[in-house]
Amino acid sequence: MHRAHDAAASRSGEAGLMNTRTLVAVPALFLAGALA
Image (spheres, helix red, strand yellow):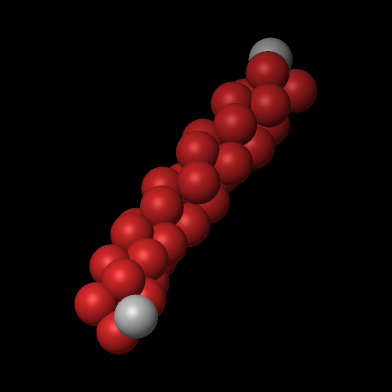
């Protein structure tokens, strides 16, 4: 039970990392396109 909880937590952590990367990458790409 504890292991399953850890696996779920790490999975949600990975999803959060992907969301943060996307949130950072989108404006960065937009700015790069605007400056180019």
